[in-house]
Image (cartoon, rainbow, N blue to C red; front, side, top):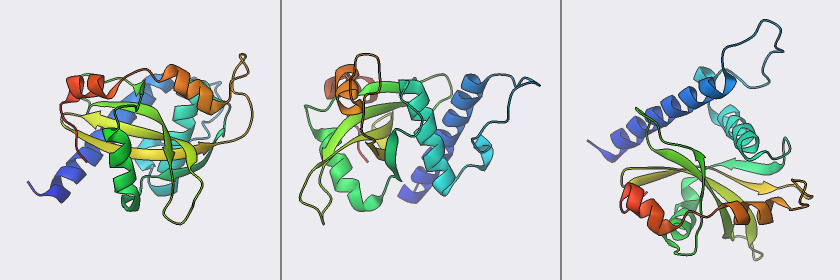
Length: 180
């Protein structure tokens, strides 16, 4: 199978994983419930996909709505930055979406410091990554709005660094030597 074929197969597997996760999170619709602000999962692509992942991530981490800002869909221009972060032994992860039967792996979030080629000052962001058997796929990366995100007065960067405790060795133990 070609690399493009593998990527397409993985994309559709990831879409199925997120569809199932979202359906489980949303549950059975109630007649009295307000319509969801999110687009239907089977219709999500491009900017809608990015916003969907933003809101889902914020909900799972109990962050204020729209606290992740700006949010970017993964970009192949930054593949080496993603790879460097994944390969770094000091990187830590937090499990965002667990693996379940029939899924294409699990989704993790990781605090991520990086510098764009045209910039000098490093950015403190998060990277949301899907890991599966010997592979990974970056989904989104995002910055943070200013301010505390919980009762402890923690800012998002500190909060995520505190809860992200899964090591690269644990990722490799679970998924093998992952590669992009």
